[in-house]
Length: 199
Image (cartoon, rainbow, N blue to C red; front, side, top):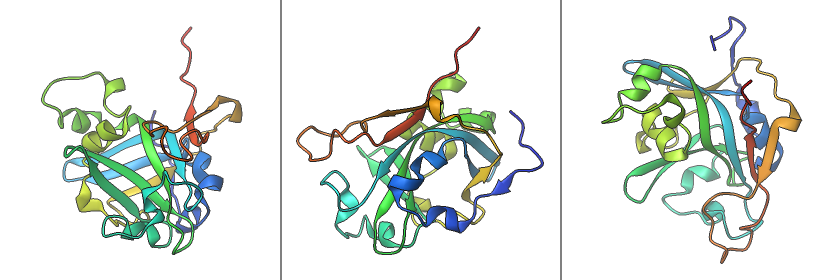
């Protein structure tokens, strides 16, 4: 897939809506990271919605040093580390003081695949570069250095390439990796695109 001449940067008002309303609109947008070596980009295919104050799943419900950025107005990056090794990235959305986020789980690489591959010690298939939150961040060089980054600026942002998304291709499931002990673990707030069938 080649970046079309009509591609545009996603504007700030895109992020100023509740997570529950805008999460599916991230699907088909292109996540772009400008690195020292050049651009890397991928079409977003898998997201999760984390609305604030509706259950105890969302750790942003409480303001802490780690979650402070979630309480800003939408359009900034929430980046954190899990298991001491994997970075995770979510886009802060909604108005200030409502800590909603849309968690980016996976993209399909379209630019800078050589730069993504270079982040790994061993060769791996293109389909295995960005198909989980941790692998996405490693391949895109997204670290906590980008905590609070402006998603309308030049380091990390979304582009609209006009990729059409058929609502029938959006698959809805529960969010991944949430303990059944949490109220809200079974909420159907993960949205991902159905893989294209070959043949």
